[in-house]
Amino acid sequence: MTHDFTNQTALITGGTRGIGRAITEAFLAAGARVIATYVSNEEAALEFRRVNGAHADRIDLRKCDVADYEQVEALFRSLDGEYKDGIDILVNNSGVRKDSVLAMMKVQDWHDVVNINLSGTFNMCKFGVLTMMRKRYGRIINITSPCGDFGFAGQANYAASKAGQVGLTRSLSKEVATRGITVNCVSPGFIGTDLIKDLPDTLRKQYLDQVPLKRFGNPEEVAACVLFLASKEAAYVTGSVLEVTGGL
Image (cartoon, rainbow, N blue to C red; front, top):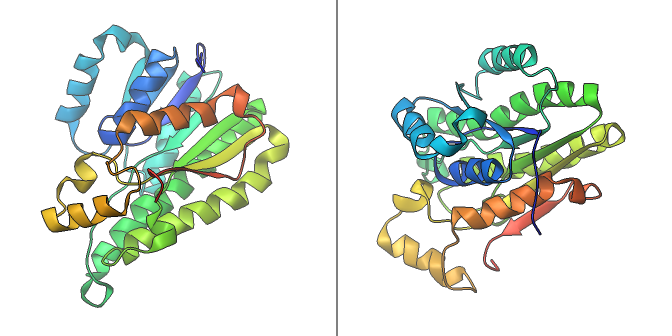
């Protein structure tokens, strides 16, 4: 299936690195205008723009901490003034891991992960829905994780945030369905990005042994699923979780 997102605008959080970068590049290749947010790594963001210079006129980089409600509100206020046709697609990809067994977990690590992964999704969805409701069309895709179902040891904060994303997605999908807005999740398993590079070799092998396809996925495979859910062809898919896990 070939997707054409010409004249559509996609907003992708964490859109300059890892899975987010692959999603941004896929939308650019399909003709979309893309607003990609980042938090602090301006060097990586500028490098992303340089590498994708062929699409420079359709790349809009914005610095925004999705966990900060006021920053998100300011972002959408700015976008409402600059993008008169609004936002068509919102991909909530920003996420962090701060692993530790629960009994030893720092309180701040709990709050940081939940605030970015879950509250950040709430913040972006709240303002995203408001702009989409005005045009009675929209696609929201939240990047979650099978960890929310399996609950891997040492990731109670991450698992809780990802399970929360699924619950939020299913509730919101029912609230906005009559406005032509769909809300879905893509749930990547073990994908070869910076997010898993810091895993010890023994743990990497343990995780790889769990995957029936016997390999880690790549970001482009996740991006392909996001593009499908963002397409007009996926108009009857909402409140769903599309797993990209190699069979976990």
